[in-house]
Image 1 (cartoon, rainbow, N blue to C red):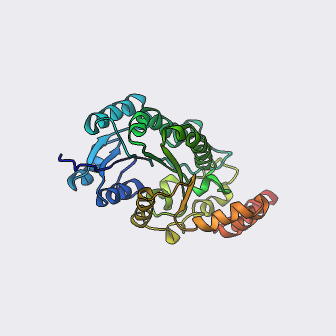
Image 2: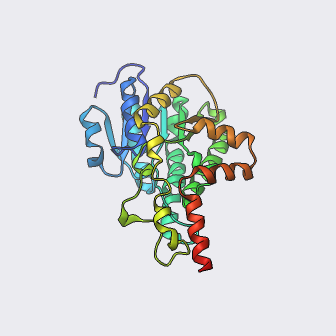
Image 3: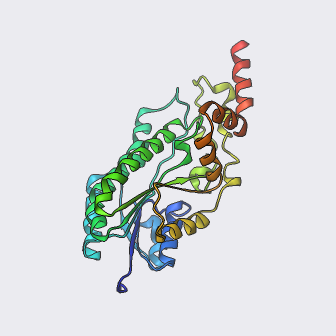
Amino acid sequence: MVVAVGQKSALITGCTAGGIGHALALEFYKQGFRVFATARRLDAIQDLHDKGLETVALDVTEDTSVKAAAAHVADLTGGTLDVLVNNAGQGYREAATDFDVSRAQAAFDTNLFGVMRMVRDFAPLLVKAKGKILNVGSVAGLIPSPFRSIYSATKAALHSYGDSLRLEMKSFDVTVVTLMTGGVTTKMSTKPPPSEGIIPPESLYWPAAEVINDLYSNQADNAMSPAEYARRIVAFAQSSKDVPWFWEGNFATAIWFMTTFLSKKALEGILGRAIKGMAEMESLIRGAKSS
């Protein structure tokens, strides 16, 4: 591949079609970056390769895979990387009283420890370039998210990690930003198929299972497209703006306001009323208990 003199590079994790990573890879490429798009399986991002992007097999949950990818990119770029976007993520919808430990651990391994592995092994490339680390966080890590407590916990931990990392990397002129992501239309934001209903028959919540499975069914209707989200994030990445958290996605600004100025009790009340089906769920549960 012919690389333009002074061309900046970006590596994005989790670039499978239909998600944020795929859109970010295309937008960085459109803006003239040398893009390394990654996914666990190369066939999942073949369309990006066909468009001229460089693709790399990468599983953020495997030390050997991350180290191999870092060495590969270093060989191709002369040991530098301007932008690392830690986007790979795994959702998990489940009642806190029903969760499966192995699935919860897998979510943390991708959403938190995967980011830690990437930072550890790509840090030398970023330091040499005085680059940027963009960690894709979520407003779910700040607000009550019923039946998504595990996913929310992974993002809350990621936010805390990013804040400390920002101070650690400051001496090397590496910028660290948490992308506080609101509503974006992705596979993770849409309703799960019936075969993946989140409430098992033995659950305390079984009387309201149908309602609970539909709780977030309208989420995608009010969400920003991945392409628009990517356009705004890449514009931010190229700017000189230096902020710890960058808020983007539908309702991100509203959630910033609520989490900044309202008490947790007030926030809980607002969200309890705003999430479609919560009142019906409570009614069904209480009715089942009294019968």
